[in-house]
Image (cartoon, rainbow, N blue to C red; front, side, top):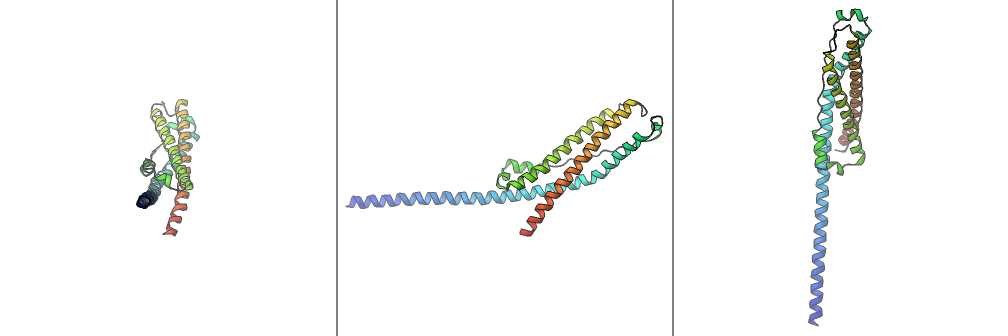
Length: 197
């Protein structure tokens, strides 16, 4: 009889240990989930701040870019024989937009703990940013060849200006796209997060 009683006691202790380990694992998992969600929210706020800074950077340059495109259009409208009398002043400013907060969120896997819609919206902003960066870089490539295109009244120079204007218009369109997408995302989530605080 002592043996059966001893077996029950060992079984009870074993069961108690199993339950305690399972509870400890569940508590640890819950705690880690809470920490992951807090980290995800911090990353999300950092990304929204980064997007805001990028918007400010691009807004300053967008009007100058639009003026450059108009300036080239006016120059192209002038008769070719008289172009050497008309100065064309192009001052393309390329904004270097940051991606640090986005990259950190990817590296520390914070994005996996955000709602899918938030991640999709943020990805759309950074895709628009990448499009701007690609088109802006191509403008610089064209500008380097632009300087060696010959006389301002030559056909080669006119073709170089036309190509440069096209790329600058594309870059301007990418700026407008980025600003539209980025502002909409910031408005949606800054308004939402402000109302829940």
